[in-house]
Image (tube, rainbow, N blue to C red; front, top):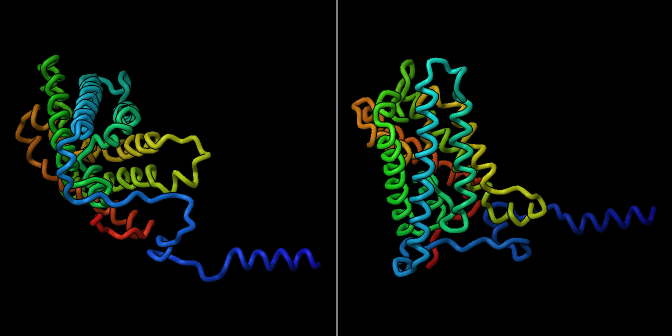
Length: 288
């Protein structure tokens, strides 16, 4: 009995009833992980660093390859008279998700492996990178997407134009509101997964678990595509939508194009707020 009473006393001392919560818990000195400091809003010194431009080139090349492979997959499915003779929607979803997995793995150590302006926007709101870098990444991502779609059209112009060029449009039977909602929720899932997979606290607590961050990110892209390809063709990436629309350049490709910018940016902002404020209780502030 004495041994049991001692165990109870030790447990009561170790796990006190009044534990800090919310932002109060962030100030604890006994954390087993280190939270990276918030990035400054502007970082002029980055413009003089080669690593800054190298990261932009990595984003350009990754988005270029992403559009090249995925649009070719979409064209192959749309060109077949029978969906049973192709990889179908599941194959398209695997193409997008698999490419994100591979490209994030390749570029994460160089640029962070964003490959998506919505992801960059969400991480910027969470002060994971400066405005300077965020704008540069978005420009390079859009240029990469345009070049990727352009190369596909250059190789197979007739097939490209006859199969829709991989452009995102709201499918018949759905309203603009349906399309916007699908893009918001889909991007929320993606960006929330990005935050969770790259979280400093998770990396410290689960360091014994051999799970690559690109794996859940790519799988999230795969699942979102399965759900929303029938609605919008799945954008959740403004650069991907812009590149396909600009190279395809048909009126119906531009009619709903705003949805594929507004939706992903709203979804990314909601994911950033949810993860940083609700889940992690980290205040939005920049380094002085």
